[in-house]
Image 1 (tube, rainbow, N blue to C red):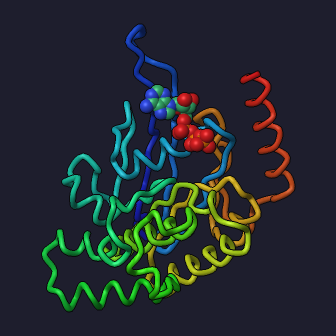
Image 2 (cartoon, rainbow, N blue to C red):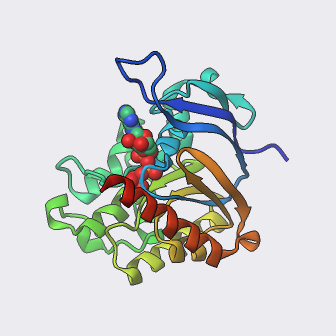
Amino acid sequence: MTAQLRLEQVNLFAKLKTQLQGYPILQDISFEIDPGDRLAIIGPSGAGKTSLLRLINRLGEPNSGKIFLENQDYEQIPVIQLRQTVTLVLQEPKLLGMTVQQALAYPLVLRGLPKETIQQRVSHWTEQLRIPSDWLGRTELQLSAGQRQLVAIARALVIQPKILLLDEPTSNLDIGIASNLMQILTQLTQTHHTTIVMVNSQLDLAKIFCNRLLYLQQGCLLINQTASEINWIDLQQRLMHAEQQAKDEWN
Ligand SMILES: Nc1ncnc2c1ncn2[C@@H]1O[C@H](COP(=O)(O)OP(=O)(O)OP(=O)(O)O)[C@@H](O)[C@H]1O
């Protein structure tokens, strides 16, 4: 089977004015994702998780290495087309002053879809994500951070991307709502075959969600395993140790 997404020896460096080549952010990253995968990306602060999501959404270019979507080189795919297929939801999404209804319809209005189709899609995805109808008239000021996060995920899904990238989607949610969201997203990969790539610092949530996990540390991919191969206790200890090390370096 052709991998849906493939990274080959990707390197990313921070650009510093004073140096020819800045310090490494991502080093020699290679992995593949299949359709319908639920991939968790884990690692201590500063490991390069968000930088990796940004490269996959083409918000940046690697300094070397290649990224392929269904065997097509990223460089050959127009950015707008790529972002319809691979959509990123940022950690603190904004609804830009729109009501929830307007925010959900907006990406479809931009694509010039007929009114009825827009209405159907919005209803479908609010239902799928269990967004109550009384949120539809609210603006972001009338939503909690967690509610905003859920609406941002729905807004990404209305365009029906093949790959959904989520950066810490549960950071503002309490544990009950967060585990509900994990269940909804898992169902989504089964019913709509959407591939989900999620950065998540909470291992217990990654555990209920993922079928594959990447562990990054200091820009290097140290673990790439299926859920059944992972030793969760070792992983927890490794993560705690790396977080502590990062804190000590900071102090
Ligand atoms: N635009 C940038 N310019 C320079 N350095 C950057 C830039 N963006 C990120 N970095 C550096 O790259 C490294 C990785 O950052 P990144 O945000 O990808 O890590 P992360 O694993 O997502 O961290 P966190 O969990 O704290 O969000 C860090 O050392 C960071 O300082």
